[in-house]
Length: 171
Length: 239
Image 1: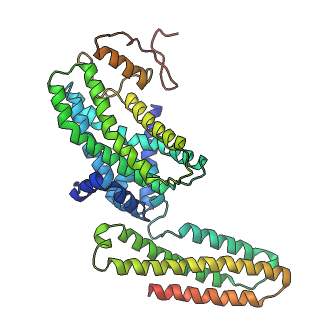
Image 2 (image 1 turned 30 degrees about the horizontal axis):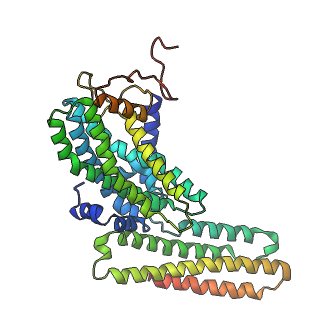
Image 3 (image 1 turned 120 degrees about the vertical axis):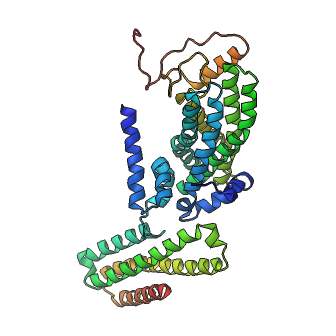
């Protein structure tokens, strides 16, 4: 009986993960029987891309740093939310293209290499914004120690430019 | 899901390219259903051939259990393989391990199904039960080796990786495969036995193979099995 309960729980976990990832019938069947092997692709839900975990971590660390009293009011919450939205959209687009390119018929089609190049460009922009988030935290630390706010303003301007580039890649 | 002939060809001729394709972001989503369908179909075909030695309901039971045997092995043993690589200071990403395992088991089941007609021919020549068990184990070992090598070749192997790590991973995967097969037996049911989906838990695969080897040579000693292991329940009358 215990073995049957364990088996039922195992199958239910696979089904729940597949539902959460927005899987079709084929992938749901695969996930129900072998979800531990598919975790890498099931953890990111539908509409998420390969950077979702890094984006979430980067934004969480930035918000935590901004919430410190010593950080002041240099960066508004709406500015962070705009960055978060742009990153989420760009990541979802990269994720969609990754799933499309995983199909050899799409990858080997005449426009496959063009799609692959566009994906790499979008991914590079996401990477650049993630690096800018780290740089912004570094500058926040310098503000706290030296009170020099202009580097933060410069980083914010750079971040805004990168976010704009993200939107343009998607357009 | 219909089996893709291109996938079957790639499984036999270029499994590493398939592992690379499944290892890309989103690759597992794209390839896992077809690879698992191949494992289920080819594994069931081989299981049905093995079950045909006894016939009747055993054909169905063995056809159901063989894909489970193939799939359970990586689910049980892959974390240990990843741990062995990490102990050696080399990162073996889970996505890569999963991709190689899915390709490895699909390749093993396809090769086992391809060997099915030869096994059927052997069985139809009047092979006795013990020799049939050895033929089943031998066929799985023969088909399983290319699958195991597919997994090991797909993993990062820098020159500094100790050979003991590779050997240990081979032993863990092979041992888990053999013991899972033992837990899921009977695949080849005894001619006099009642057909059952699973037998009670007793001893382990090595003791059984040794006893089968002796019995195939006419020595029928060593079958006095004991119920052992944490899953085994004591038989009525046992102390």
